[in-house]
Amino acid sequence: AQTVTQSQPEMSVQEAETVTLSCTYDTSESDYYLFWYKQPPSRQMILVIRQEAYKQQNATENRFSVNFQKAAKSFSLKISDSQLGDAAMYFCAYMGGSEKLVFGKGTKLTVNP
Amino acid sequence: EADIYQTPRYLVIGTGKKITLECSQTMGHDKMYWYQQDPGMELHLIHYSYGVNSTEKGDLSSESTVSRIRTEHFPLTLESARPSHTSQYLCASSELGNSNAGANVLTFGAGSRLTVL
Image (cartoon, rainbow over all chains, first blue to last red; front, side, top):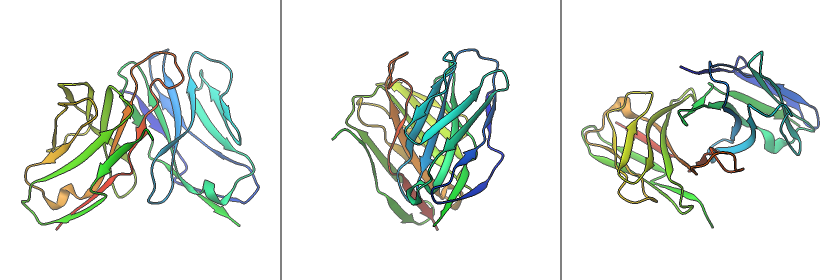
């Protein structure tokens, strides 16, 4: 079974600075998707960024970018120019051939003014 | 506006009561999911459906049941609630598909927070 590991239960960053959240995963599949989702306090879970495993180019969405290392099974999220609204739980997730989304345990990000 | 709706948002009930958590989506998505989110925020898949009259149990065993009679509706039922069922329940949906931009991207509802006394 696939597993997703987020080794940082909590992270903090100063406003306007850059922070990187770590994620590793375990799979024997070659074709899959990786995601980062954001869950603000008491609010809806939303997609931050998606990466297709067959694409070598790292995905980017405005201030959010990933470092996808397929051989190392690593998928980190970089948030540049952090804003107060970035404070949330961030979940790394994997979807393979079963089409079921498997989540890591999450990283709580605090943004300090 | 296309979205996914969950009701109730908050529910406090006594042990032994039957409850149904509603989930509806207006996006025409074929795939729907229920996740249980524990106090530590970890998410576990408890049920999923790939279309009408299709339901499957997820990775975490659950005493709840689901039905999928209409594409847009995926309710979750607990016949006899217990304190161990206290949790947040998240409903989600996604398109069927392969390589299009929306494929496999889950849209989540706001959640139903259940407390069983």
